[in-house]
Image (cartoon, rainbow, N blue to C red; front, side, top):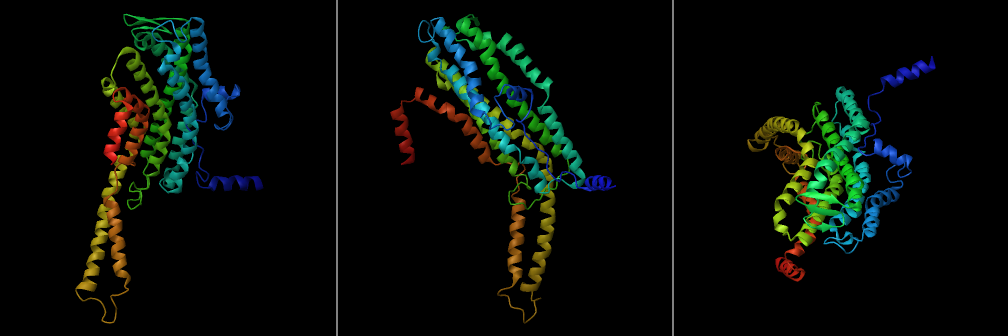
Length: 406
């Protein structure tokens, strides 16, 4: 009987008394494989350095060894291995950052479910649907077919079609010779195309798959009738915390910018290209990856717009009633003869009401600011900045900067 009473008591507890765990990174087939290989623990910070070192060396070290065996490590071809900026940047900088980003996003993303609940944004009646959205996101994160599809894309498109036709420069290199738009790989080139590049591309596509899971989760939450507060100080009805979560993806954007900088550096140093020729690629990539991070937040636009309209109407009516009463009392002579104006709370209340109405009028229709957009864009562009030295000498660049400052 006691056990039955305890079961009934648990059944009567409110849903989501303890917010469910939410992580885009702590799960999935690759995560389980890394655990079995003792490259990750139950927490992502465990064995992080070992994981980064093993994956980076798996991609980079065989290329060094094979190119040395073939005599192309530092000489013998127009582009020796040790002079290949793109390869070193991709596998020794971008790849480690993509692995490190898992820890950053994991730590910043975990409290997101709690924030929806702590701020009272999810009505009690909608909590079962909210819980279902969380569970659905975690099932998709752990999906074996999803990661198998990513592998199929990497090898079916990246290796068979893209690699040999778009990677090669039109010169003899350590990984092969490009002739008529087709790469004739060396031994090191085969390892590059069949192991190193697929590993990097899989990790990168896996991040875009996680962004898709995040966007899908937000879309499902946006379908609920949220309890937005037009007078919330964040000017987003209480959803302002989502912009902070999105900034956790900054390392992924930095890794993408680093990879682009490496590709451009090779073409500038060895193919005679100019930095200005890549302006379309730079703008396009930055716009794409910033939108991939912030675009999902736009699903809340209809509810934010509706909350702003309702808040403007309701607080406008309240402000009119209070202002009219204040006018009748203190301007039209309605106040009692012995009631002093000095020290009256009516004036402060009128000011507070005006501030609340101003907050409603300033409410944004997207839960992020232009500053967030600029921060993410700059993060993506920072790795490209050193390439400015290929256009303007360092002394001249510093002179121009000093003139701008002083």
